[in-house]
Image 1 (cartoon, helix red, strand yellow):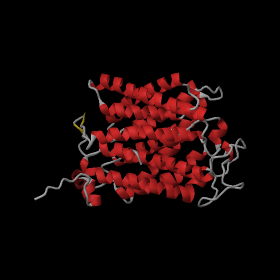
Image 2 (spheres, rainbow, N blue to C red):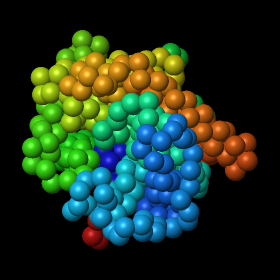
Image 3 (cartoon, rainbow, N blue to C red):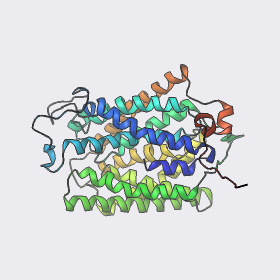
Image 4 (tube, one colour):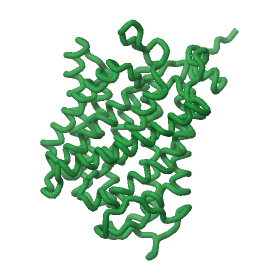
Length: 385
C-alpha cells in the first residue's frame, strides 16, 4: 500500500519494519476477506429504489451474477472481476488508516485481528448502505469515491483505536506535546506524492468507465483540491506553530484529496478549490485539538481521513451541481456511518484489550517494535572490518 511510505517516514526508525509488515499484510487480508465474504456483504443484491434495506448477504466467495461478467450499470467494458479488485483495495485502504494512527505501540496480532473483522464485516456492511443500493442510497445520500464510506469509516476506526490503545510513552509530559521525529522526511514526502498520483486511480477509477469527459473532470477537481489543501495547511500551521511546517503541508495535500473525494464528479473546479482549502485548514486545527485531549495519532490519520472525510461529504450538500443533493441527507449519512463505524471499532478494540491485550509492553515500546516483534531492524549500517 502506498500509505506505508508516509507512515514509515513519519514513524521512528526503531519501528520501521513493524509499520511495513502491517501495511504489507493489510491488503493481503483485505483482498482475501473481501473475496470470502466482503464483496457479497457490500453488494448483497439490493434493488435500486425498492426499499430502505440495510443488511443482506449474497453468499460466500465471489460468484458471477446472472447475465455474465459485465457490470450492467456502466453499459459494458467494466467487468465483475475488475469491480471486485477495485473495491477490494478500497476495503483494505480503510484498515491502513487505522494502522498509522495506532502505530508504534499496538500489538501486531491485535492489529491483524482488528483488520480481519473491520475490513471483512464492518466496512462492507456500511458500504452496502450506499454503494450496494441500501437505505442511504434510497435516501439520496451521495458519496462518489468514499470520503465517508472509505475515509471517515477508517478514521472512526482510528479514533476508537487511539482512545483504547492510549498515547505513546513520553508523548504528553507535564501538559506539553513532545514531538517524536520521524525516521525519514524524504520518504514521507515521496509517500504523499505517490498517494496523490494514486488518487487519480482512486477517484478517476470511480467513474467506472473510460468516459473521457467525466474522468478528466474528476482528475482536475481532485488535483485542484490537493493543491489548495496544501496551501490551507501551510497558512494555518504558520499561524498556529509560527513556522513553515512541512508535515502539515503534506497532510494538507492528503486532506484536500480526502475532502474532494465525495463530490469530485459533481463539484465544479472553482468550488473544489474551496473544498480543498478548507480541508487544509481543518486538518491542522483537528490535529491540535486531538493533542489537547491527549489523543496520540502518529500520522494525523484521524485529522486527514475522519475530519476531512466528514467535511468533504457535507460539502456535496453545499456545492454540488446536482440539485437533488441535500445537506441534511449528507449529514444523516455522515452520522449513521460514523456511529456504526466508531461503535463497531470501539467494541472490537475493547474486547481485545480485556482479553488478549492490544498494547505491547513498555519495555518493547521503548526498545522498538522491530526488535521485539520481528527480530530485524529497518535501517542497519554494516561496517566492513
